[in-house]
Amino acid sequence: MPKLPKLPAPPLPGPLQEPPPRPGEGNGKAGPLDGAAQAGITVVDWIDERTSLSGAARWMMFRKVPKGTNWFYTLGSATMFAFLSQAFTGVFLAMYYRPEPAGGAYESIRYVTNDVFLGQFVRGMHKWGSSVMVVLVFLHMGRTFFFGAYKYPRELNWVIGVVLLILTMVMSFTGYLLPFDQRAYWATIVGVNINGTGPLIGPYLSDFLRGGSEFGATTLSRFYAIHMLIVPGLLAALIGAHLYLVAKLGTTAPPWTKAQKRVELRETEI
Amino acid sequence: MPDKRAKHTSKYTLDRGIPGAFEGETVTRRRFMTGTAHTAGAIAASAFALPALGFAIGPVFKSTPHRWEVVGTVDQFPDNNYVPVILTVTPNIGEAGKTTVYMRKHNPEIDTDIYDRNTPYIAISSRCAHVGCPVRWVDASERFICPCHGGVYDLLGRRVGGPPVRPLDRFYTRVSGENVEVGPRFSVNSQLRRFSPRDPGEPLDGIGQYLYPSRPGAQKL
Image (tube, rainbow over all chains, first blue to last red; front, top):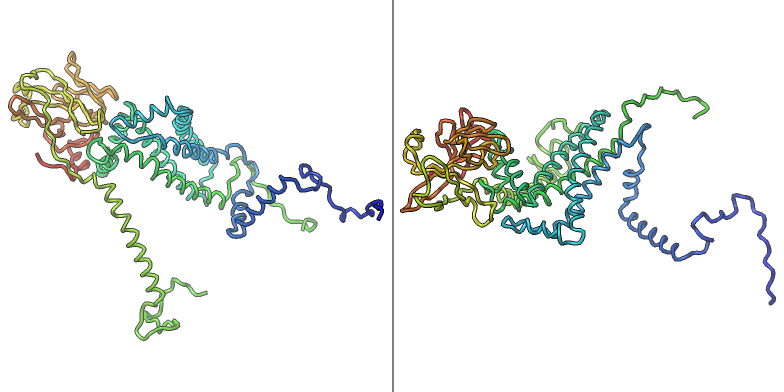
């Protein structure tokens, strides 16, 4: 049978025509990347069908923000990323660190700093990152205060934020001892004794921190456990609660934003 | 909608019209099961939480036996000037467990205080009574001086300047044959009256000894 000439497509009205391929989608033929994209969609759909997580993700990520939202509103996220950086670098530093007061701790830090590939960089990230985090926490707190964002109904988020500030300070205090050099040792002696000046419970708090009446064999491992297990867990949980409340209650407009005059609905807009 | 917090009219489930109620029953089976499950959960949680908590705060109540350490011979220490010796406070942790003690033979002309009468040697701790930095004995000015915040103490360890709240701590001493031994630490108030050891920064004058109580594990010598 001779091959028939292909007839031109009949002139269809616009809405019935196939839309032209969008940029990046190729010429309509399925390429290897389309298969990969389809696989990704399938996996996400599979999970979403069983967890309904996409609704939560949309609720968290695609929120309405007030007019006038500006760069000051990024300080909270910046603090969170500082925390994530600390958590990430801290996990890898823990692979090398040994909490032995009789020389092992100092030697392991010296080894990380001088001998491990990128060790000085990762340790530097953790060391300087802690200061960055404290600075960002205070900037974030100042933003919240000066914008009046702690007022009803956001008081509980302020309270959680204060607990997060205290926990950040506990992290700074306990982490300072871990290099176990002269500065770390004496700063911790002074810090624990400042704790002890609190009347009635101060002496007990000092003994709890040191694990005894003197700086002893378990003080360093005690600080290490508080620094890498107890407080980070609390911090992560409370950051979750903090973010939940931010998403639930929404953010505030800057104080200089004038409230819009109420415009009565006109018939033409209904 | 009925108010759930409203007081029940009767304590008997039968009177409240609860399905399946027994004669004389006051607690429903549902409520009993809920309470049982909560109690079981609380017991299970305390079974690991309480021992772990006790494990963590146990050292607060632990009493460590007194250590006596030979620091020198009887003719090694003059009675008008201090000689520094190194004392091991916590063994097996290297430098971090050591501290400097300033030793001097008892001098009846200087140590006129009644509490010092029977002490063969005066052993003054180098731990500053402000926040615990190490003080050093400066011979020329006859003062203990703290490098951190400027605490100054006189020959007997009493504060003469700076932020410290009480005199320098001391250690018990004894002579064993030809050797001088240093024992446990004790704290003193501004009249050099002895108290069980307190941490730096805790005053012992007036109400201080009650605001900063002694350790539960502190033992009498």
